[in-house]
Image (cartoon, rainbow, N blue to C red; front, side, top):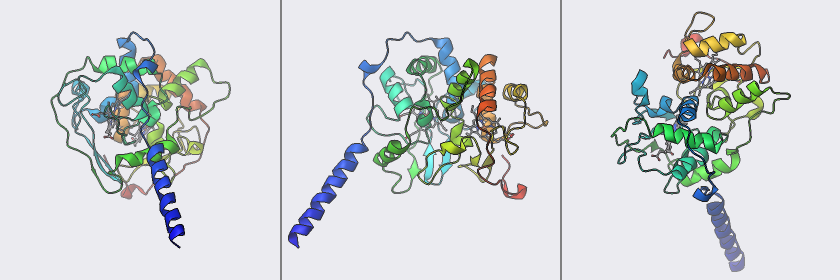
Length: 313
Ligand code: HEC
Ligand code: HEC
C-alpha cells in the first residue's frame, strides 16, 4: 500500500517535472542570428505586411498616428482581455533598448526578453514563418518611428489562462515554421504571396477556423471562422462558390482602395488590414491576390449568422 502510494507520488513528480521542462520557453541565442545589415526599405514593407500598427497603435489612431506604436488597444477574447503593449522605441515604457535578438525571439518565437512565453493573441505563430533577415529589417524600421511614453496595464485573464507557462503546451502543439499549404507548381509570384500571407500577413489567424485546442485547422485553410472579438464571421476567402468570387485584379483593387467590386467597403478588422495592404508595393499586393486564387477552394467552415444577429462595426 505504502509502496503503491510512493510510486504514484514519484510518478506525479516525474510528470510535473517533464511538463515543466517541455513547456519551457525556447529562445534562440544571439550567435544564431545571421550577419545582416538592416535594409530599412524592406523593413517598412515587412512592417506593413505584418500589420503591427493594427494592434499596437492607440485605439482611435488614424493615418500617421498609426505609426505611434504606444499600445493600449484591448483585445476581448473568451479567455479574458488582452491589452496590447507599447512597442514604440520609448526607452522606459516601450521597446527602446531592446536588442535584435530580443526582438527576433519575441516576434518569431513568442518569448520575452525576460524568458517568458507570450500569448498567441500576438500572432507570432504566423511570424515564425518569416525570414529572420526580414524580421531584423522590420526592427530597424520600427526603431525609426516616434517614441511614445505610455505604460500599458496588464492583461485581465481568468485562471488558468493567466499562467504564461501554460502557453508552452499550446506552442508544442501549434508552433511550426512550416508553410500552411503545399501548392503544386506554384509560380514565383504565388510563392511570394504565400510568404506574405502565411507569414507576416497572418491572414489565417482570422480566416481559418480553430480546433478545440486553439490551433488553426490547416485542412480548412481560409474557409472562414467566427470572429473571436465579436458575433460576426471572418469570411471564407478561398476561390469557392461560398468564398471569394472576385477576379485577381478585383482583389488587387479592393486591397489598394478599400472598395469592393460590389460597391461596398472592407469593414471591421479587415479595414485595418486593408490600410496596411494599401501601403505595400503593388507587386506584393498582386502576389497576395495570386496566392488567394491558388489556395484550395473550400465550402464555408462556419455558417454565417442572420443579418440581425450580426453587429455592425
Ligand atoms: C492581433 C494583434 C497583434 C498584432 C497584429 C501584433 N501584435 Fe504584437 N502583441 C500583441 C499582444 C496582445 C501582445 C502581448 C502578448 C503577451 O503579453 O503575451 C503583443 C506583444 C508584442 C511584443 C512584446 C512587447 C513587450 O513589451 O514585451 C512585441 C515586440 C510585439 N508584440 C511586436 C509586434 C510586431 C513587430 C508586430 C507586427 C509584425 C506585431 N507585434 C503585431 C498583439 C499583436
Ligand atoms: C484581424 C482579422 C483579419 C485578418 C488578420 C485578415 N482579415 Fe480579411 N477579413 C476580416 C474580416 C472581419 C472581413 C470581413 C470584412 C467585411 O465584412 O467588410 C475580412 C474580409 C476579407 C476579404 C473580403 C471577403 C469578402 O467576401 O468580402 C478578403 C479578400 C480578405 N479579408 C483577405 C484577407 C487577406 C489576404 C488577409 C491577410 C493579408 C486578411 N484578410 C487578414 C478579418 C481579417
